[in-house]
Length: 111
Length: 122
Image (cartoon, rainbow over all chains, first blue to last red; front, side, top):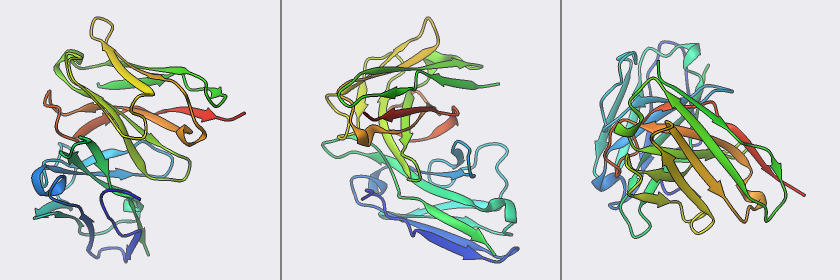
């Protein structure tokens, strides 16, 4: 059971928009920055979004991030078949057992 | 170009020990915190451990606390994970990942290695 809750799967047609939610608590998302990662099949994860809504260089602006309270959202517009992947949210947890935490991951299918 | 190359993954018996290494290049190693993240076969990502830029601060997931030890040698641009009392549930692909900043209380991992596979089985 992951500390952060994501939907197991989402799907949409090419060209459409999809959002992936990530729910946590005050000890993690509520008081720390959220990052998002894309993992294509058979590859290492790749940073998509950091500090809630910033994109590393090379990440297209089709990808966006937002945070409100103890939840965060990843948005992807103009879906492409190459976006089919697993997506993970992550953040720091400032509880007694301080450390990093990830969501369980969301499988995106582009129909 | 940033490169992270993990090594040391093998098949080990339950209760055994193993040391993973991560060789870093293409950036100033001692300017950044470093992490280990693992992924069991067919499962999601699990954060394992973090070490500050100077090795002075370390953090561990509850699942490995007391059994795993993270360390670094900045003179060799290398990160390590000493794994003791290994269990079947430690079977996973172990990734070395670079933090975006020197600050520790963040999970912004901007570069990842390709991983090294640890299998705990009798």
